Image (cartoon, rainbow, N blue to C red; front, side):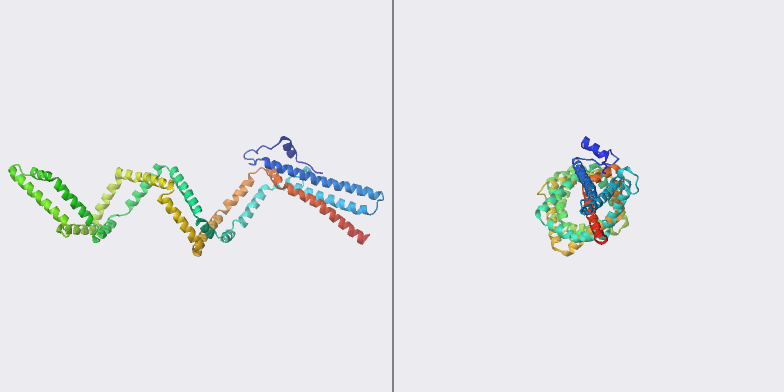
Length: 445
């Protein structure tokens, strides 16, 4: 009564089946699949053998009954007959899942090959409705308590070290993949565009006003005056020569030297006094000049316009653009070196931040709630926005499978269990037939 699949028999004779052609099913039957198919064939043999056994029992019981063996033969024959009916019915049901029983075009058979696409669509809809709904995802994530678990995990120094190492590796990889020319162009364009769009004069004026008010410029003045004094002391001859060389040609040379010496001494005295006297009038003049200039930077349109023109000229110079672009190379080298060094300040700070975050997450319920809420909202957004794309992965994949290959693959995985249905059908049918026959004999004679 059992008709074996010719492909299955041929496959068993040839050994492992070769992978399906690309685009047909994408399945490959390996050693594990072959073992499953052998197990299915063994269970088919067992179920069919049981069917044949009850058929033999039925024939013998009928023969014994006709030979006058006694009333017990009726009970045995009824049980065997019902067992055959149950076995055949379940054989038909199991076989109809994968192919047409005995090759007959009976409606609603070969369900998996003929209804493969509909099954894939139904499976996709089932997953979307029961696993990818916003409420299901939110409820599941809330029960997991991701924030608290993540906090406890990060609070472990070993885990913090692991995350730090993984982040460092990812950072190094990302910086290695990025092309310097592309990043330099982006950084240079971003800095230039932002600097060009932002007027800098008012900000510079505010900063200069604050520096003068706090006396921060005094150190710069001290440095300049001290350097000027030292330079005058070291290059006195040059100063006097410059003054003498600028005198008219008709003046006597001793007069020129006298004038040059006088100018040098007065200049040196002025610079020395300015260096040694914090309240020197020249220092006050510098303060007033800086305050006025700071005010002009903030309120004088002409001064602000001149600063903007100067800014545009500076930004437009090739040297400045090269400097901005080359800054990326220095930054990248610094970050890569810090990421590779386990004792670098960058990695130590990242590790400390992770440990601190872990301890806070493990202890603070409010922070746990925030993290859980962020994760829930993100997950719900993804599943509700891309639910169709996610479920289409199932439906499109199933639709791309070859029907015959799909049927054989599924049968290899679940066929052994399905053969137990045939065995159970035989046993249950026999018991039911026996019970029905016994009741009918009891009440009907």
